Length: 253
Ligand code: G3P
Ligand code: MG
Image (tube, rainbow, N blue to C red):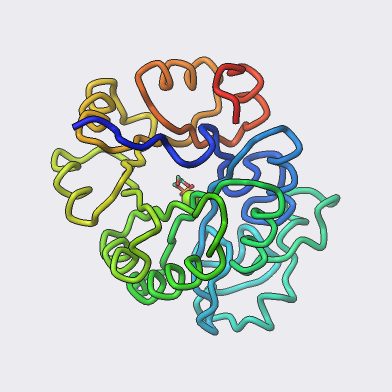
């Protein structure tokens, strides 16, 4: 089987909204990615204690906000009061933990294609996928490029397949497991997203031969990105969208 469709997102995606150019998973990250000419972003979505989808990576608030405790134990009104930018740099003070709706509106207006990572907190895989898949389908309805939903959670991807079958899915792995193709097939994944450290050329070729797209993370060195593209990788997720794009003029994002 050969790939019948081109990779739908930009070939270079800024990791956690803007990579290292802005505090992760904030609206400022989208602006930073767009400013350097990056055409797409990856971000993480988890449920708040009120059950709302919000952009954040960790299950706890301490590392990236001035709050304390679990995201899943924090109500929306309390999340909204937190500062998600000052930890990164004082000039980003006032950045908030964005809602999925805010992210969608901003990405669509900036023309950024989206890899939305479903990032359930412990024990919330299916509920997170239910909320995120439904809401993403609504928010990007009619958009030129729908988001690609990825997750390390296979049960989350199965739920997403049921509720938003039209949104493509990517199976996220760190090391590529021996049965990666069966796993991708089981969750109906269109893409394999693997850590660059554990991805080899043979797997890229085999995946693409099986009709899957291949994305890899987190690649910050332009030379490494070029090698991966030469292997046939469809997408690089990077903390340095500025550097990676600048050195890859043939892969316009
Ligand atoms: O989607 C690629 C990457 O974001 C997965 O790792 O921990 O940064 O969400 P993490
Ligand atoms: Mg992520």
